[in-house]
Image (tube, rainbow, N blue to C red; front, side, top):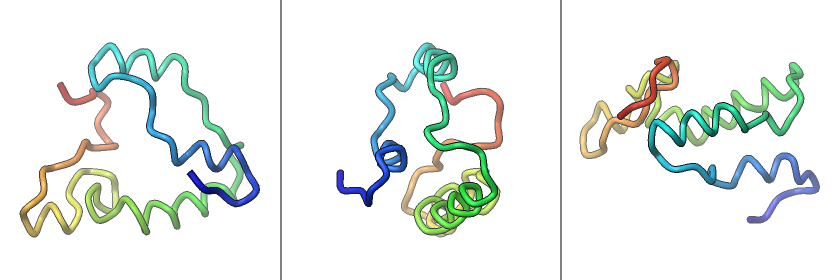
Length: 87
């Protein structure tokens, strides 16, 4: 995966190596750490990335109600606002 100078930012492009199961969610929750420090600049950049790549499916608030879902043809993605993983 190409990246520009920062391996920590490149880590954001790799899929998580956990199964899509409740056990995988638990393991990921216990083991994963944010690759970047929580700074105002990183949060703002995250918003830019979300608006560019995620909002279309996940919606503006992460509720799985993006425009491609509302307009049909695509399954509802996971909600980022619910405490319980799908399953």
